[in-house]
Image (cartoon, one colour):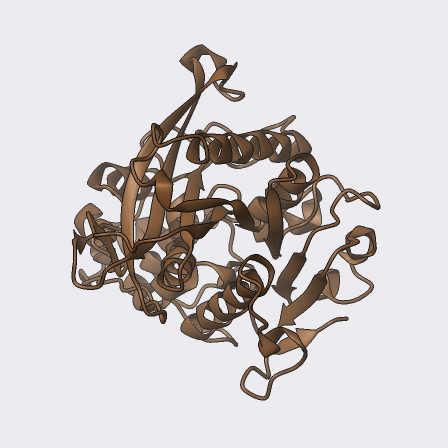
Length: 392
């Protein structure tokens, strides 16, 4: 994420959702790598097209538990917000997803109406797309507000989204992990994404933006969230569900870089996953001696010998380097499922298949490293998953 060549892989998820909406409305077949400026030009043409109906549904989780959900708000009084210091102390919205008793609670929205309205307004999504604040908020998540939690202690997995992308874009991974017995904290990095009710101050890479500084700030956010969730129940009423000795972290794109940066500074994180992100900065030998999974697209930069090679060599614990043939940068999050449902042109790897692979391997990795359950899936290539290549 630190070079011009990687700019296309930093496209905002909601910007591409806007593009998907315009494609659906006009019937045109624009490339998936079109930049947000093109989105805005295309949506103007779409405004006169017939109105569609958008009904989004994320893949259902596969584990034995339901997924409960609760949004909490945390304030780090120890530092000012790095992007808008005048706003005061750093504030974070965190979606907690936890193992719950099936049949309890009420369906949780994908995002609030205010967040959805802000997304659609900022991305100039036309009414003719059929995507309204209500329909975006009502995307079926298979998570349930107020669901009764399962008893016991569960490992904690902290998730960090891609640059410019709302925390909600990792919802399908969060519900999958919760259904298999993990408590998940989906962290929203304030002023850094298009899914907030607040403005995205650092979107579109303003001049002078240092992505290493963004990564470092996220690492502080993530360690602060762990602090709050593992010191009593004041931050979250269900914090007693968390086994504070079994903590993992995963991130998509810039969130993957933040995962590695957090692990170099915070030994409480026992295992980490980087989903198609660069490392900001590159790792030095000995900085991470705990389990680490690198899961990326089967493109030259993430194949053996590519940009991940020095970081792979620096990892000194249990490690796996996997790539997914046919996937693109956003195939590791919810975005492409919603694109398909909005009528976006298909891609080599079907969207639900990409999500299925991501969930299966990330869950297996945390099962093996946090729960000490051997998962043969990680031992080598599987005939059931021919798209997944083991680079080492």
